[in-house]
Image (tube, rainbow, N blue to C red; front, side, top):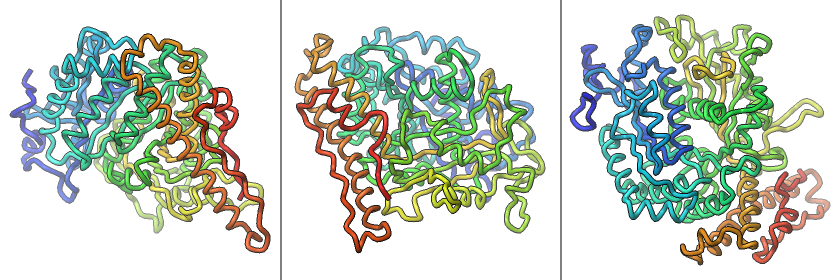
Amino acid sequence: HARSFAGTAAGGARARRGRPPGPARGMPAIKECVSVHIGQAGCQVGFRSWELFTEEHGINGDGTRGDNFTEVDPDDDAYIGFFHETGTGQHVPRCVMVDTEPTVINDIRVSRMRQLFHPDSLIAFKKDCQANYFEGRRMAEEFQIADVTLDHLRKVYELCDNPQGFFVYQSYGGGTGSGVGIKVLEEMRDAFGTKKSIFQPLIYPSTHFSGSIVEPYNCIFATYASHKDHLTDLTIMMDNEAAYNVCINNLKIASPHFTHVNNLISQCISGLTGPLRYDTELNATLDEIQRNVVPSETFRYCIIALAPIRHEERRGHEKFHTSEVVKELFNGKTLLSECKGLTTNRYFAAVVILRGEADTEGRDQLDGGQTAGRTGLGSLGGGRSAGFKPIAPNVVLKTLNELRTPQAQGRTQQIRFAPWMQSSGIKVGIVKARTTVQRGFCMALPQRQGVMLGNNTAVRQLFLRQFVRYLKLLFSQAYLWKFAAHEPDFYMDAKEGMIKLIKEYDDQVQISAQMEREAAPGAAATQLPGRARSTPLDQSASARGLERTHGVGAAPATQS
């Protein structure tokens, strides 16, 4: 292996092309992102994501660049933010994968991508955490799992010239993702502070697709610990139930496998990171996304949607124009978060990232007939061939405005923002690259694809569902023998913390409803009867009473 972490030459390809290492001519400095994959789910989703990244950028399984990308614009080196290029021309992912049980890591070591990853970045131990949050934290400290992970993470971080942040992939259902993951996040905060953003693609447990009966314990403990200490800057909420439903309803897969779910999640991650890996018409860096989406540290949990999602057999029967893709992002049918009643909840902010070609039928023509594409570029999935025209931003903004303020009589208002947002709250990013679908995935390759990252009060439904399950187990004293020896006071602290978090979101819905009633026509002349505020969650309420009071299935309706 001529790919040691230290001593490799950054920008090797640029030096071989006769130009000094560094950013492309006329381009801003490339900002690198480092990924951390923790636990079985985090490593499996991460592997699928890196597999898709290599296909998009023409990188082979051994890290070398494919021959069919020799015509790619040499100035377009934005993908280096995710891959470290050695002096020999190999591209090594800027990532660390760690799991307490060796099965998943060993599968990666024998896969066709085994030569892509640096051997030291694949960390495996020989004992799992027994689906126990406290056991994961104990192992992270006693076996120095967190320290070993952080040491390798520092080596990857030191190879970055201009690091902008981290992506931490994990699941809160198991012991490794919750226990070890929270400990690693604490160490990362201590080591790198708050100057570098931490984005967390999080796989949240679901109600009907449960891998362990004690998932609610692990989930609530990890959620409380992460929220209390502000360990992440933005959390992308995804759950298996929503992903399985999308596979069944949109991809028409009768019995989805977890590989289908992982591929679907990797497509979302690819769309979200597109502005960080490609040239863009409207930029959307990590800092910009965080500033636009997160109004405060409390409300940093976002939902994500991908559109269009169709089976490959339906590719020739449907053609999605840009406006149709944008509308589908907000209709709730392609959300990877199981949230209902989006129109009765309120958005704090949203980011829409689109990628692909402009419509050939004239719907996406740029103002003045401008041609935004550059010629002489590669023709593979992630490249841009001659005559390529990216999606026009004005079409996207027009569609978003129509969804937000419908003019036609009887049209449903699909995007409802908190009253204080008025006409702001939406950030748009346009990626100048073709769409790509992972090899072997049954999803149709669209000409245009979009990702929506939304900060919506409906996300509290995910917390509430797991909190209800947590209370049922706790009040029944079920499986406490597995956890009782570890910090018994933590149970009540986590319960109080989750009550406070859910109430924070519920209060925002009630405040929005009150402001909308006051702003309604005739509100000054006639005092409308205000909707009674929901009472704070009673600490002694049963799980059944909590579910009935706050409506797990739908958010409280409001009048406007």
